[in-house]
Amino acid sequence: MKFRSSKSKDEYLAHYEESAKKWPVSSEDFMIDTPPYGVTYIRVSGPLDARPLILLPGAHANSLMWIDNIEVLSKEHRVFVVDPIFEHGKSVANKEAKTPAELVHWLDTLFDCLGFKESVDICGMSLGGWVSTQYALARPDRIRRLILLAPAATVLRLRFIFLLRGILAGLIPIRWFSLNFAAWLLNLNDKKNPENIALVDDLGDSMFIATKSYKVPVDHPIPTVISDSDLQALSKVQTLFMIGEHDQMYSTQKAISRLRRLAPKMNIELIQGAGHALVRTHSNSVNEGLSRFLRHETDAM
Image 1 (cartoon, rainbow, N blue to C red):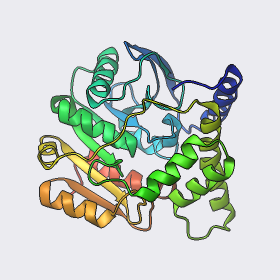
Image 2 (tube, rainbow, N blue to C red):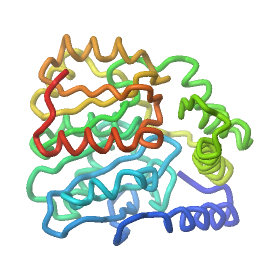
Image 3 (tube, rainbow, N blue to C red):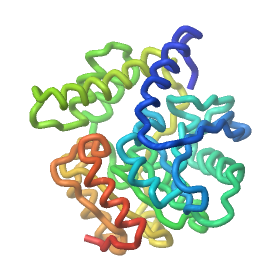
């Protein structure tokens, strides 16, 4: 994605660096050359000799969206949080990676450059979940465990209202649209609670600064619903599907029903009371579920 101007770039990166100060654990960051797509930025936390865990954020987000999860996840994993080449953040794109094959190639290149010789764990949120699914289908031998947090499409088509609100917040640089979309995704009951207001402002302002800083993307990856056979093929990889009870993207119950029918061995966790932004509103429940799954402690619903 391209910035609107050098001033927009400076403003966005200043906001990014200020937000990064809240990262709760020690970290290193790297710019990894991933030709032909450009340079991919990653932040790394956790023990040097621990199993790799890759985190891919959702749309309109970057690696800092995992700020409430990293402390728990990095205790037992070497965690690589990524600014995808096709999203907001510090990565610099030379060529758009937009098709499933190109996304797989980009991740192959990234993993090779990081020196991953054995299978890794990968966790994707929303759009990152769809990308993770595409990679697991193409490269099941490179994935030990797959975690899908409310993956975009993948299981069911996106609701029209979700697409409409996302387009307004992602394409029109007006703060009200961003705040409104953030509040809707967070699904907070007490909207007058000072902590909830601060949470809406934090997520909404992050969306707003990105929308007004970046040009409108023309070749953004479009998440799709995978076929019955592909869903069944995911059984080659141990997979956790985690979703909020009130996810706005599609019907939670219909998604779970399709998974139970076609992928009965898949682990499923339902986060009570959560909407789509479950990593922000229910981080403790999310962290507990991810830790159980990564330690082999999760059973299918």
